[in-house]
Amino acid sequence: MIFSKIWNDLRFRFYFSLCFVSGTALFLVMLYAVAPFLMGFLKGQLPPQDYAELQVFLGSYRLFMDEGWFREVQFIAFFGILMSLGGILPESRTPAILLTLSLPVRRRAWILSHAGIVMILVAILVASASFIILLGGWIGSESYPVFKAIGGMILLTLGCFAWVGPTFAVASVTLDRWKTALIVLSAWFVINTLDRLPSIHPWLPGSLLDSLNDGLTPWKAFVTIAIFGAGGLLVAVHRFEKQDV
Image 1 (tube, rainbow, N blue to C red):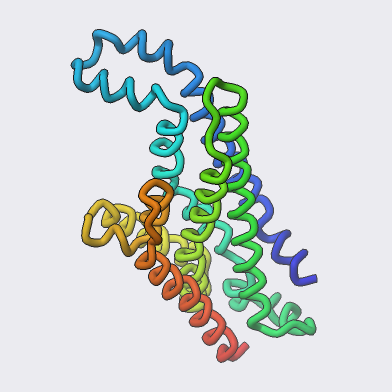
Image 2: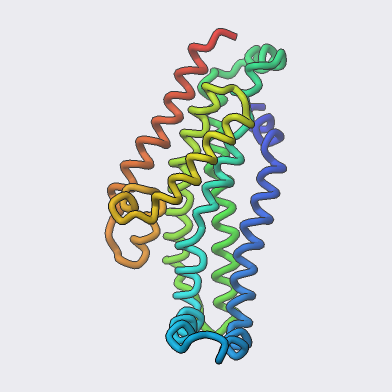
């Protein structure tokens, strides 16, 4: 009952997200496949130093995917935000909320179930892209490490939680999906810009993937995810349970 209602509300957003994420991974695999032709075309068009750096980047499937996918997939959080919009919080401004709350389901269950489903769907998004990357390596001449792909998948999914919680928190205040989208996506853009600063980067979810190469545990990023992810959900649950509907 509760899961079917949540799924019906966000399924088309999930289908769109799945097509985009899988399509991006497939594009990168195909781009690497045509890299030799691309390098031949660019030879003589670029300065020697730039050409040498590009040659190193396109000369290793592992390096290419490390840099082209696992370090540049901040947009995954966008889909976590997208699927967190809607649900019971904006519905509380409509007469339909009376019917929804008449069901034998606690208020907090609606929010926590929605957040849980979003995280599962984000994991499916990342898993589909990781599978395409692994398959591309197996078909090609250089495979991508399976355990590294699994680790990247887990870290990407975990990083999205830092945005799912705040999205629900903002929605509990605005009770409007469009206002929530504007506020959270604006914050997401600003945070991604600040992620380039060395002093701030270790605290942000984007630093999680650094551990795939340096082997260090990103404790600071874990703290940020716990505070904003879990804290955002707690705020949303508290406000919705106190809301007079």
